[in-house]
Image (tube, rainbow, N blue to C red; front, side, top):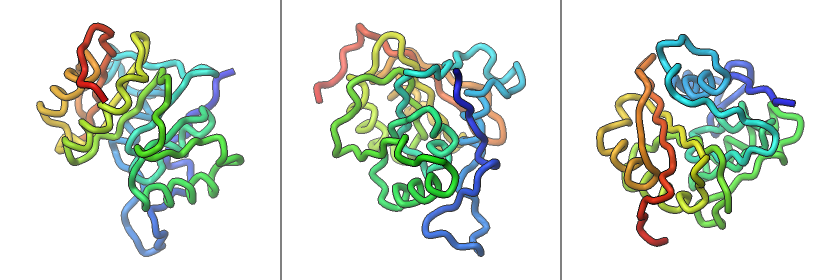
Length: 200
């Protein structure tokens, strides 16, 4: 039985601290693009040539760098491990899970100071604004990837540069990008088991 992936708009999601006067949403076009790709709800020209993970029961899913918990909440039924070092993001994610999911405990919230997952089948990366942070995050998680893992990054086009793609290539493996839509883009990387990575 496949579990549903619910779009952010189907939930009551807020940033933290929640303020009804805040006009900013707790998700953006990059989050929507990734979730629509995972559900197959995209025009064929955008990501038809890029792999879409099945997220079957038992798939070990890790979410890295979720901004306000929108990805985590939408994918909560798949029991993800979510990794963030932002205290505000952690509080927002917990609040959004409590508000929108029947059992928030199905999500494993961690920081980079916690032991990383030992195996990752699907890694979803919300590309941070700082390249050094992304390098540190990928460096920590790369050992948990295997040759059948799929890594999908998402970000706004202003956040994804040639240096971003080069970093995915160096620490994960062969990398390509999707077409842009609503100023957002996806990154697809396949782990290369022969890649020599810097030691942890």
